[in-house]
Image (cartoon, rainbow, N blue to C red; front, side):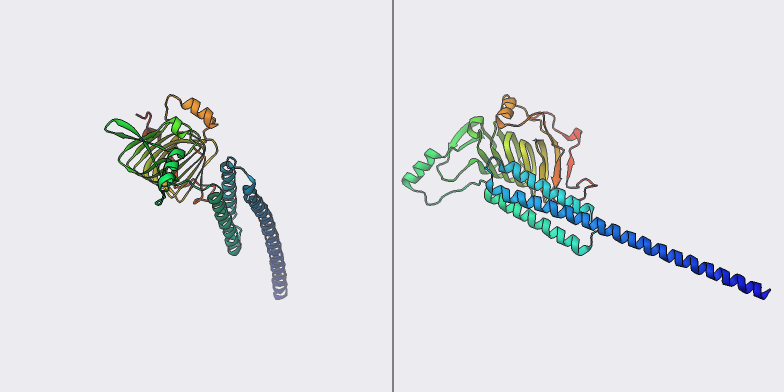
Length: 332
């Protein structure tokens, strides 16, 4: 009986060893397959990332060869490509090693910085400027050559002001507690700048070439269709009712935007942004859309790229669609 029992034990031991050997072999095969799959993922990711990086590099080089009219849409394309690459990296971080992920993020940061520097060089933001030493004939010449008109509603009387200083662009600068307006003739195909305004309401009926908004607080801005870009930054607790080919919003908070945009809106370093469709109306609006070269039937107001939010699976917490019950239905 003991011999039989020993034989059974030996057989069971051999079976267990064989089973253990097969399990170890299976584990090694699965580990090898997993390693191969990971390597294939890494190789595919790196190839795709490099292709995208090279494409963006080529777009950056091409910037120097384009006309000023082509540049806004070109830089919008670059911004979208960088954002798509950022989202691709974010979606792939489950299998990326930390050092490789950091390397990709450094490349993206460098591309974004180069794009911003190029845009600043080739499409500088027009700012108000005053020359302190302008004298005699220079001032008179400046008054003749600068097409600058300011209209301020004061006690119901509208007045037009001519600014004699050189370097001033069309718009308003350092104004508070006023209702301001510019006519279609004053802004047609021009760069308009609204800067350092507090508690102002501004009406721009017409079709500017570009619109720059900077340091606005507690303001309401109403603009007709802008043929190229609107650049807005440092806006706080304000309402923008705007139409354009592309919108760039930077460093702003608590802003309601009633938007018509034919490409996409891009935002960075912003929060508490609410967006609704453009709904301002005035007599020549349809004609102004035609003159601006914008299609009134194409409005991508929901298409917002947030450079501070790379999670492709979740909506950015920095902006939202404005609730319908909170939208202003008709502007007075």
